[in-house]
Image (cartoon, rainbow, N blue to C red):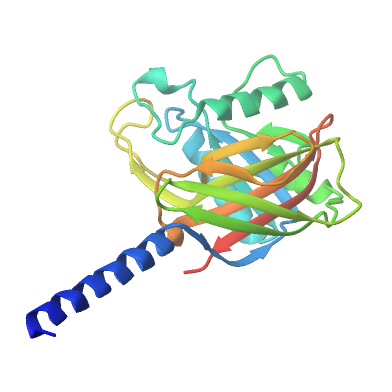
Length: 256
């Protein structure tokens, strides 16, 4: 065979293998390095447009630093965006999530900063003493309902598929399962609004989440907006559909 033709064939084979390998790599890959089950969950409703929230950010960071069994979920609401600064992490379904707790606790309205602990108690988010008292009084009775979760990402479609492996004979039609994609930490320099000129450092910012109340609890898909595994958590909550009490929680840390 002519040498130039052989070279062309060799290059073509290399390119075809590269395309196959690249396509496979960008398709579905398991990303979890390790996972754990927190003993307490603090759901934190916040906004970069609220001047009362940066002190709460620090309070909650201190609490979680002191108690590694407590995991924070930071929901950025949209309803303060009209005050001169649009929170880049705000999501409409964070408002909806908070309204479920407004109804549960018979509150007059939603507010920030608010925390909800284990789906059972709520408090102002910058009141460290009151939050710690609730955590001390909580008799956490999370049950081992989640054995494991398979996480598959598709970088071509920018999707994450969660496939929970639940403990047999525990699955209940009285559950709802929430799925989360979370940034470990985000830094934002706010240029306008109530927090103008402040540099906000926020932890465990929810980038997307969804709630499955289908009673099947097979696979659940979420879109993701960035692909930075060094700054990502995945999480699941199982809650009682009626009381919103958290029954089990799972956090997955991607393989670096």
